[in-house]
Image 1 (cartoon, one colour):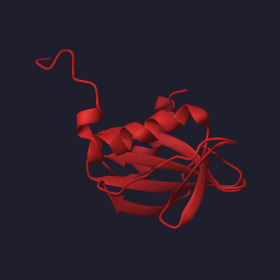
Image 2: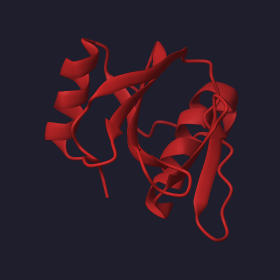
Image 3: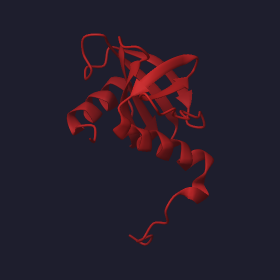
Image 4: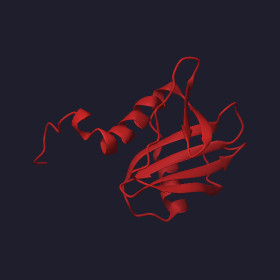
Length: 120
């Protein structure tokens, strides 16, 4: 399920960015607890904490990393999880493709599908 526009707008405003949000997805600390929102722009990977009670209200910036920072790989099996900046996170299965696409855009550009309408 795509992240709703109001949440995208809240994250953009919270971070004070004008960059296009290329990818955005929610995550949770491994084993439950705090919620996070990963926001990927052309220049950074920002990780916003939403706390334990809310999954959609930004509370603080957990970290900001250069765009060249790899997010995955995502381990699947008993659930989708990944390690990022020394912490373990869980995501819903539907966001695995988002993480893979964000990483492929930087680390494996040749694996991305070609733009069918490059002149538009």
